Amino acid sequence: EAKKRGHGGCAAFEEAMEARYLDRLKLKVDLREAVAGRALDLAYQPMFTPDGSRVESCEALTRWIHPERGSVPPPVFIQLAEELGLVTELTRLVVAQACRDCLSWPPEVAVSVNLSVLDLRGDEIVGVLTGILKETGLAPDRLHLEITESCLMADPARVQKVLHQLRAGGMTIAIDDFGTGYSSLSYLDSLPVSVIKIDRSFVHDIDEDSRHFKLLLGIVNLARALELKIVAEGVETPEQLQLLRERNCADLIQGFVFAAPMPASAVAALCTHTSQARAASGGSPSADF
Ligand code: C2E
Ligand code: MG
Ligand code: MG
Ligand code: MG
Image (cartoon, rainbow, N blue to C red; front, side, top):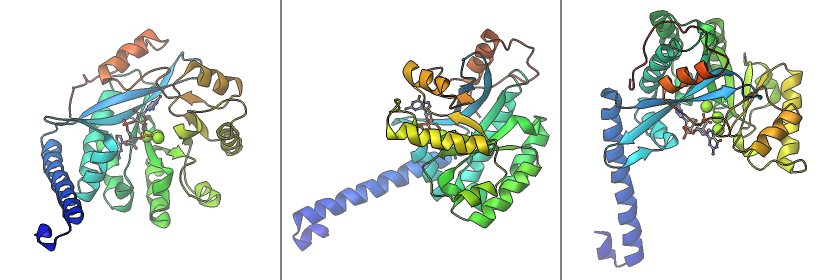
């Protein structure tokens, strides 16, 4: 019908918009099916001590391999899940599998999962997480929760309340992508947070006199003063790693320089090859959830 109006460019634009809309709609239908059919997988990326000798925790990262489109990036399908009202169901599946997989690793290794802003704004998440801990028997201090800095501000009073409940349940709270949000320092200080993960934008182009490195040093000073544990994200090169080590910028390193995301069974094997060959307890991890 747009064509009848005689604006070729405009009609083409509208058709493109419509095609995009239909494409997302189709992807949403497929995502709903994938969640219902447990067709998503988890990959785990280890966080190492800066000398690389020990894995302290692993971040669960959801993977969706679409039968026709191949791998769909997490930010894309997480947003779709949020629009579908499906994200807390997805979180529930992720956390349940992550807890089971964590039980197959050495007992000093924790697992870290990402929460959506909608998880924090809904009223189910505390019950969902404590329920899974009870069912799986994982010690609550082995479950770490990553909240991006940008989602802290969506509903500050609500987020503060929920985070205190989760902390009271024994879970550890980490602020993800730190340095990219707009949260005030006094608000941050009111939250029961024990870890910050410095966003990889501060790490990827660092050298001694880059502005990003100066910002990073500022963040590190702040975090040290508040006695927060510091994770540097997205460390890719030996040069970045060396600088972070020399200047004592991180307690843990996560990035391709040490390891890319991998299956749960590979984490178990990796811990065996580092100095963590202690007996792992129970449970055999499954490939999907
Ligand atoms: P994030 O939580 O900040 O996770 C780190 C992302 O950086 C991951 O991307 C990881 O694969 C990638 N990465 C790790 N090391 C390096 C490196 O050295 N260089 C570079 N360039 N990238 C690195 P991924 O898996 O694509 O996930 C992207 C984002 O999607 C995550 O960012 C997280 O916010 C979100 N996400 C992933 N899984 C879930 C989930 O189950 N639930 C929720 N709510 N969000 C998730
Ligand atoms: Mg994360
Ligand atoms: Mg992150
Ligand atoms: Mg990030």
